[in-house]
Length: 427
Ligand code: S3P
Image (tube, rainbow, N blue to C red; front, side, top):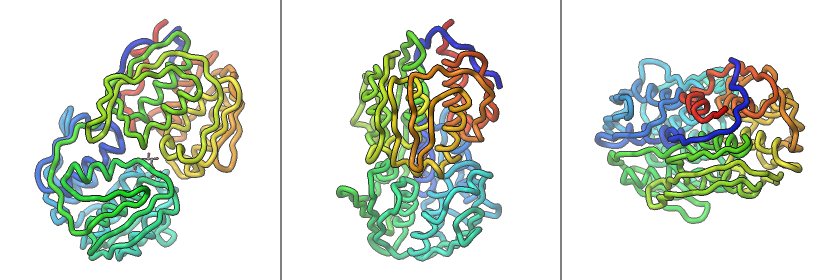
C-alpha cells in the first residue's frame, strides 16, 4: 500500500486503544475465575481475539460486543477438553500464558499458531512446566509448535528465569495457582507486572519481594470488572511521530503508565523530546495518564541494561526516532529482539537501511547514526505489526513515495492505526 504524503504537521488527539498485554490477561483471568467479568476498552486486535477464541474452545462462554467483552467464568474446573486445536494465530502471549493454565488441567489440548509462532522458542515455558509435572510435547522435543499438552497435578517449584520474560513468568504463575504448595519465581530484571496486579484484582494472593514472586497453589479467583488502559506500546508510534514531524502537537489520552512499561518515556526525555504527562491517575490498578507530545530537537543516547524489558516492544520505533536525532544512538542488551514476531534486529535494520538510514545490527541490538534524511522506497512489515507501524511513521518524514507491503499485519495490535494516523495529518 502507498502511504501518507509528507504532512506539514501532526495536530489533534487520540484515544489510545486498549493495552494488548492487559486485554489478553483480562480474558484469561475472567475465564478461570468464578462469575461474570466485564472488560471495557478491550483491544479488538487479532491477537486478543485469538485468546478469546481459544477460551471459547475450552468451553468458556464469552460474548464479544462492540465496546466490551463479557466472560462467564466457572473457575479452573470449568475449562473442558477442547474438541479442536487451539489456534493462537500470531500471539506469543496467548500460547505461553495459556500453556501455564493448561499445565494444571487434566485433559489434552493441542496448540498451533502461524508461521511466525512456529519459529518462536517454547522451551522457555515448556521446560519449567514439565518440571512442575505437566506432560508437554511438540516439534523438536517441545521447542516449537505444534505443542501438545496433557496437564494434571502440579508440584510447586522455585524457578530463576534464565531470560527476563513476562510471558514465561506469567505462564509459571498460572501453573503455580494450580500447584500443591508455594511456588517461587525469581526474575533477573523486572518485567511487566500485569499478571501480578490482575491476580490481586481477581481476589488472589501473590507476594512480591524485590525480584522474587511467591504464589500459593490451590487458589480460586472471583470475577472482577476490568477497564483496560490504553496501550503505551501503541501510543509509542505517535509519541515518536509527533516528536519528528515538524510543528506537531498531539495529545494521547488514556495511556497506561505502569512503571514496568514506561521505558520509552525515559528514553524520549533523555533524547530531549517534549513529553508532558497530565491527568495522571496512579491509584488505579493499572496507572493511566494523558501525554502531550510536541516536536523537538533530539540527541542520540545509549539504551541498555535494566530499561530494556521496559521498552522491548518499542525498540523498532525508537530506532526510527534515533535516525532523526543528532549523534549516535546505541541499543544494547536486547538479544530478545531476535525472538519476537520477527527477528527485530534484522527487520528493523534491513527496512530502515532501504530508506537510507545509517543503522547497523550488532549481536544484541543496533547502532544508529542520526540526522539522516530518509527517502521513500518499497518496504515490508515482514508480517510484524510493530515493524509495519514503524514504517508507516517513517513515511511521514520520507522524501518521495514509501510503499508498505504486508501492511495488514498491523491489525494484530492496532486495527484503527491508519485511521488515527491520517486523522492527525495537516497539510
Ligand atoms: C508480553 C511480554 C513481552 C512482550 C510481548 C507481550 C506479555 O514478551 O514483548 O509483546 O504480554 O507478557 P516476553 O515475555 O517474551 O519478553
